[in-house]
Image (cartoon, rainbow, N blue to C red):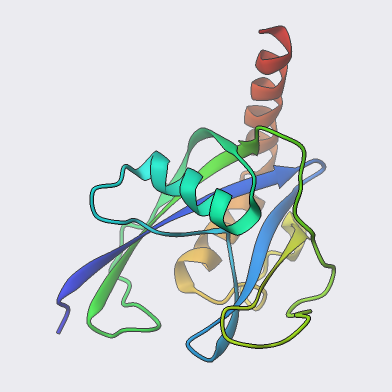
Length: 165
């Protein structure tokens, strides 16, 4: 029986030509690949949550460009069968140069212990269901691949706007 909502907020950082940042983590004894982000806390706005999560995980400030996707189907948490997951995804860009390390290989942890986390750039073409572990992320990966041309236009418009300001 579902007892509460678990609201998750994720940032999709795209790097030309068509790569998205993913995160490999170990939580609750499981290794998985997902998009960077995390849980909304009580009393916190969605944008504030996403910015907080990115600072916590990457020590980098971000700008939110646009909403990309919110799941519209029932998804039970992979970690707690009493929680319904609602996930929102936003296209983002960095407000400062990248200052976090990225790896090339999946689960390339220095030490595979609880809480371990690494980041990788993944080409849109590699966003297959076997490369992302959670059902909502799998849908977002497919949507990224299908809409990559429009996504790159959105990001390029934002970059151009920032250069003109």
